[in-house]
Length: 486
Image 1 (cartoon, one colour):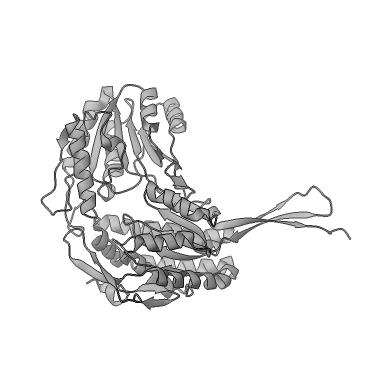
Image 2 (tube, rainbow, N blue to C red; image 1 turned 90 degrees about the vertical axis):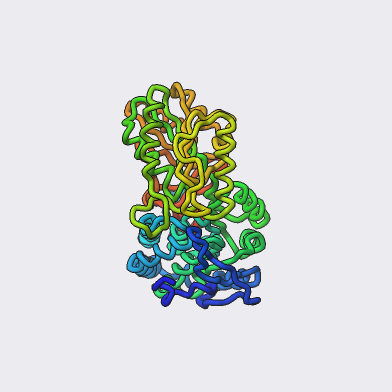
């Protein structure tokens, strides 16, 4: 076990400031996807424990929402410092349960902590307004008030950062929260709760529900009348279900859903820079990110050169355990993920695509897949429609700007897109034309706490991070003050 295990309670859930086992003593195993080793047996909470967590959050909201912004800021800053002091051990825990290389895991811890640091400060800038009134004896005030209890449902691919992106604005606004982490990766959530407790966050403000009873617990969180808001990161299909579940109580929703990011390389681009950008975007976390390049388009004049250079770089990526020196690619999260990659590659090659490099399981273990480049993709290939969520990069040839914009936008998703070009007119035209919430121009990595993260179309609702990030956790109240004449 990790050294941090002596400090962190990795077997129980966290409700109302107490570390609890499940009422029926049921547990589930959390394993390392790189080797199958069991890391921990964790309490498998159900609806009874979830009801307790919602009640605790509702009770805690009364005090937490009335604290001054400065008080909330100071406690969150203490939490941020504890996370960074424990960065290495938190990263080791994350790598063990999720599989990503240790260097990437350390980066995720710092990235997640940056949201807590940022929103600690934004708590003090949650400004309202005084609006000029139409009548001389009145004043119009606009107040921003915490919405209430928040339910957060988070994915396995960024088990620290996706929690931080939700809990930080919630706490800064004065909300309390119930978090349901993914059953594959609950340990990072429990570790954050332990450090939150040490930082002085009061009981009931943060609650963690580890569970494999996803449907029952998720339904309760998204239909419960005492939950005012749901923040979810995951698939579009589940997002649609959450919208339906929340309709009867008209919940406020933040939904960060599926992606099918296009990555376009125009013939005036810096080819070497575009190769590095594609490498960073596509192969981060072994391709298991919602904003990674899913469809790579290269203009005809530079297509062969781009494919050749990208394939050479991809062939050099070291695959292995998270803690080996130089490892750039870890395992996929589970058997279903590897089977999906197998299916998509087989479908593409059956329909005419060629494998440039990779295209097979890696000998490091059953959940490892060799980083792969495919070329000459046909329009009917399933991987142009579905999220690949694995280390497979299809490269498609295109002729002109209008054609590639039409292809890039021909998706129900609209989360992220990327393109490389130098012509200033083209840069402006394409950035405006792409139907996504995020556009990277000559950059393969776009995530930053200072920027609003979120999508359009069926990629979601709302934004996380930036000065806009508090908006989804507050209600705007209009107060008309009359009778002000003497």
